[in-house]
Amino acid sequence: MSAARKAFAENGFDAASIRDIAADVDMTHTLIRYHFGSKEELWKDVVTDMFQRLDAALSEEAIGPVDFATREGLTIFLRHYIRYCADNPEHARIMIGESLHGGERLKWMIQYIRESHLALIPIFKQLMKTGVIPEVWLISLFYTISTVCQMPFVLSNAISELYGVDMHDDAAIDAHTETVIAILLNAPERSPASWPSLPDWARD
Image (cartoon, rainbow, N blue to C red; front, side, top):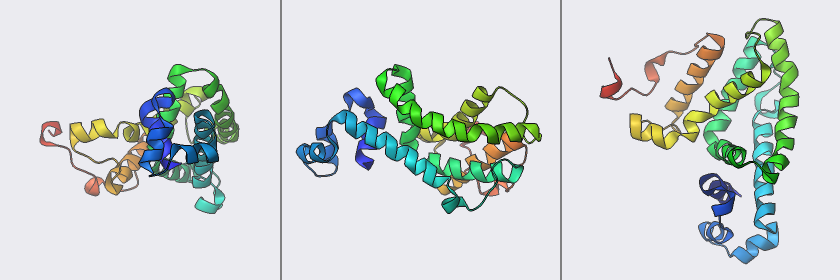
């Protein structure tokens, strides 16, 4: 499943090959087809697994009994969501790829996105009502938060080339988390002393 997720994320559905996935895990493509069926069925299993992993990362079992519709709860949500994004950059890459092309796979995937947003809508409406976040257009809010949390991990190769920073390093993940919290809640909570330093050309 991990190899298939990587292949779909890096190559897109059309270019991803079951034979290449099989070779990556030292299996025969026949065995993969036996267990998963067609490439499309394997893709659906990968997407289902992605959203199950996301649900697990934000579940009460993982986080504890937290009211996300509070300032403290939103902070905890952001910390766990960003960690998920760091550990699973393929999730956003697959989402972006399918959104760019549209079609039946995206329509199929929307069921999971809709379930996620249905759970988040009352939370963010309450956060706006209580003044924790400004009253803004909900669609922009969802996709702004999603983008700001995910994108440094999606573009980790570019960041590595430009700044020499490994976005999968704990220090970089922590720095990004605190930056997102500061932007969204105007409340940085940790000292930047341990954050990865900028290269010489980007310093004052």
